[in-house]
Image (cartoon, rainbow, N blue to C red; front, side):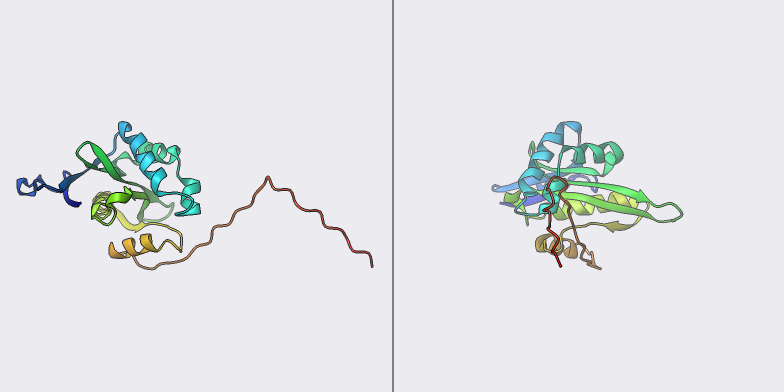
Length: 184
């Protein structure tokens, strides 16, 4: 399937971009409350334990509602017809005693069957444009060090300075094994 991207926020719709047979038009728009279930289910399909333990642990419905309630203009969906096929959820961060405003792209997801079709890139470009309008000077993302697909994608978007980070867990429900003291 080939995809024609239509972005209502960046430029008026070009009538010459009407889909040919076998092509679908994708439109980028702000997310609404009615989009929450579909966005959540796309995330569930993408952010599995097999894909990434850390993303799987943190993806839940509260991620969507929290970001929407704090920065709804940075919560975008890509839709084809009446079907949502991707999303980008971001926020901005201002640090005390810093003149800089930071953008944080928290989640970006595209339905598996159309990944690598350009939808993720257009979602990123739109969220980047919006962050820049809000005075953001640096956009941050984070992903697992072994998530090569995400690293490749974000490098193509212009990101650099890749730094690995470590996730650690402590299971508080696991009982410690008692060790016997050795007699001298």
